[in-house]
Amino acid sequence: MTVKSLSMTLAAVAILALLVVGLLQLNGSPASTPSTLTLGQMRARLAGSPPQLAVLHAQANELLSGGLGALRARLAALRGKPVVINKWASWCEPCREEFGVFQRVSVSVGHKVAFLGIDSDESSRADALSFLHTFPLSYPSYYDHDGSVGTAITDSSNTPVTVFYNAHGGVFIHQGPYPSVAKLERDVKRYALDA
Image 1: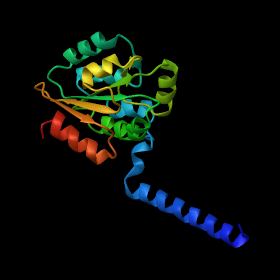
Image 2 (image 1 turned 45 degrees about the vertical axis):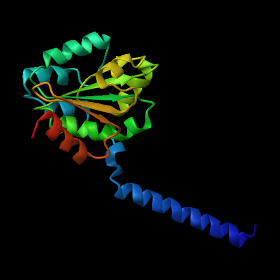
Image 3 (image 1 turned 180 degrees about the vertical axis):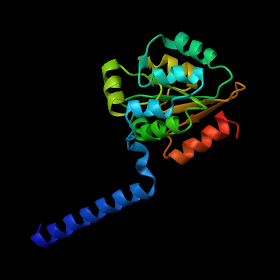
Image 4 (image 1 turned 180 degrees about the horizontal axis):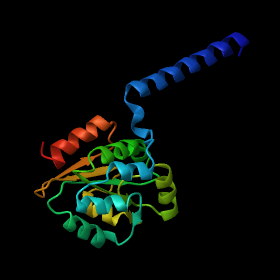
């Protein structure tokens, strides 16, 4: 290979890389960007929430145990409130990409809507806790080491999956990641708030 052909190949690779970055930016890639809010700022913005939701905000970013029984008891305590459950895992790349979306939306509508997470099919609590340290949430997640809780709630073994419960108990399940704040906010309004 000549120096000239090597230079042309490198230039082509550089142009391709710039195109990919540009397309990602046009495609609304901010989903993978974590919120700049700290846990304390999230809690402050959610201060004054109704008691059922304030309890969730007090457990912000915690990884709870108790399995399916504990999650179902929590859902029973939230009866009459709209609820959004996001099933995620720290090893799941689409989950990681949508985490910034859930951080922002859970703070913007957290006065009206309960958010919960299921850390599903996660072999190590330490991996999940490390991930949550980087991407804090304004709500708790339930640790689900074998994926059984996530499958029972979402009717799917895939991740990510989001379940919307409206105040009347209606359920809508969304398979796959949320690429933008606007898309998640639209589905929260449509499926959880019946707006």
